[in-house]
Amino acid sequence: MMCLWWGSGRQSKTFRCFHQLRADTLWGIPHLLKQPRMSKPMRTITILAVSAIALANCTSTSVTPISQNQFLLSTSAAPACGQSGATKVAAKMAAVETIRRGYGRFVILGARSDNNVSAINTAPTYSTTTGTYTGYGNTVYGNSTTTYGGGGVVIFGSNDAKLHVLMLSPKDRGYSQGVDAKRELGTDWQKLVKTGIKTCTN
Image (tube, rainbow, N blue to C red; front, side, top):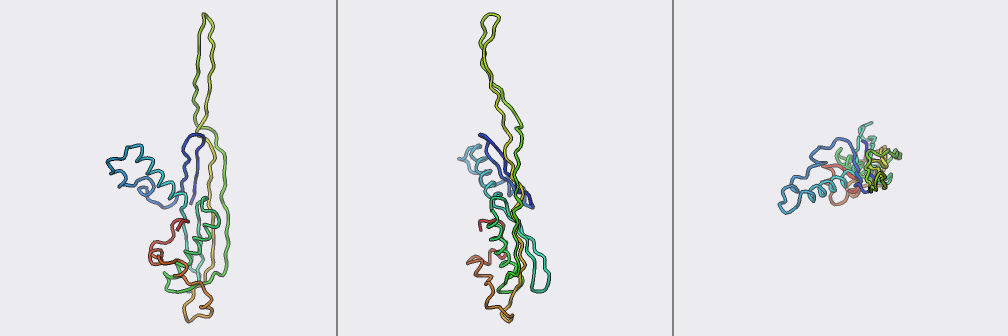
């Protein structure tokens, strides 16, 4: 997954994460376009705002089973989530995967987090020149101003968290000391088990 944020000056700043998301999820909110009282500029602003919020907090998680009751979990989160956000999502996804596999509790045997976020400055992509001139006979007086824009700071990369998880059933030793998966997810645990954790704001 790659996340980008760019823009400068008076331009609106944009943040995007690129991974497996449908195009209509990113740029289309169909029911907003059907509102008759909303002007076209307002529809555009609303759609882009909703998309930017979703993208700025996006996460993705992969799971690698290593035994019948253990797995390795890797979560990548957008720069805006921070390392704490990535770790939080990883812990919740550990609970999700524990329930999906028929266990009730889990223990984290190992954990690691990495900040792989970087930033670069980009050069201007356009320029605009305006001027005022006055002529007297064969002489012209005036001044001109050139404004540059389109460049700015580009932030890319991700915050990553990796967990080694041991799943426990009631008959297993240490079950009472394990993390209760359902309690970790809260009252919406059934919904989260079905959908997974897609953002660091869950």
